[in-house]
Length: 226
View 1 (cartoon, rainbow, N blue to C red):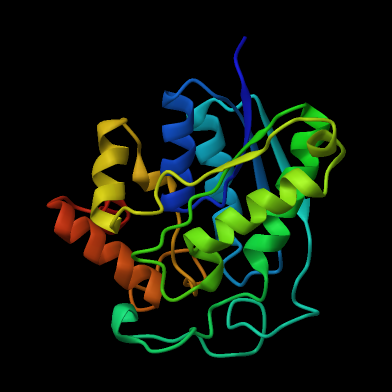
View 2: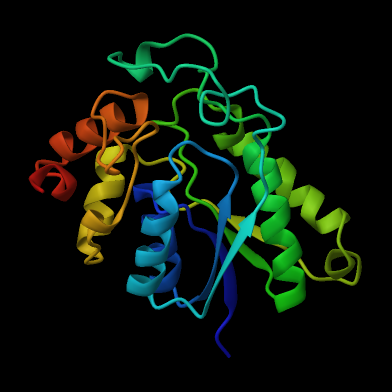
């Protein structure tokens, strides 16, 4: 019997790769994409394209608008940082969305219970993660414990596992792994503050990390080739 996994699919490079790795390990994928009021909502279109490319079993799109909470350059009237080295930035950057991964994983957990699935997949990364606290191994371990305490399935003996296949990989390692799996990164979107036509700005932290990853992987970003 094939096991289902609920994968958080943003349309970005990391979530695409994490989902593909889960698929290569034999999981049937149920993809969850969340519109949370992000200024880079262009990624929702990419998530749909990626879901089709992966041949997911189901693709659920939810709207949980976090703009009312604010506190982030991705959901509020705060300028997106540009033209800097993200790895040299001290502290947590303004593009951090308060409790985002906690909220997203909670939604994935709820859907997993309904699907009788016990595996969640998220493309967090603790090396090229731009200082986000909810991309660390400690957070994933704590959430996994919570999942097994706070659900009917957990109380009745099921054990949830949060898969983080990219957590110890560099961006270039992620790209190389994805290319080995045959992924088309031209389907993805990474930019925090895209142009009106949806094209990447090339200057935000996410664009900088993506460009560095492709450069270190010794290959060209298909989005730049367009």
